[in-house]
Amino acid sequence: MNKKLVYTIILISALLPYIGLAVNFGTPPTQQNNLDIPILLNRILGIIWPVFMGFAIIMFIVAGFLFLKAEGEPAEIKTAQKALLWGVVGIIVGILSFSIPFIIRSLLGFN
Image: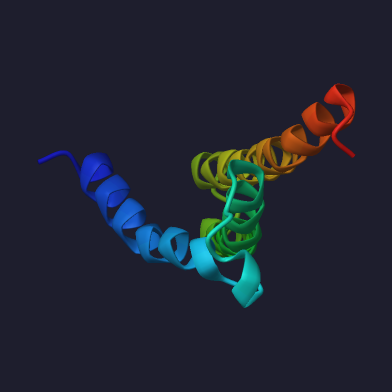
């Protein structure tokens, strides 16, 4: 079986309980039956954002270890630079994806 597929399945199965918790997390008892899509999406984003930031921090730590392990060897320094670059790209994509719902909400007038 493909390693990426296995890691994706593990990640999705690890996040499913959090999505289930997002349904009733923090709602007053009078509003538990009136759950709409924007509230659910906000709760899911509130759970996924810290997980994403944890992965980003781990990515930068791994890149730092790759730089330390390189010991001046050009090929390994290039690998560490790629890891750092992809970490930065991941942060940018994460920030953009987190801000898109707020941008759409403000453009549609749902402040």
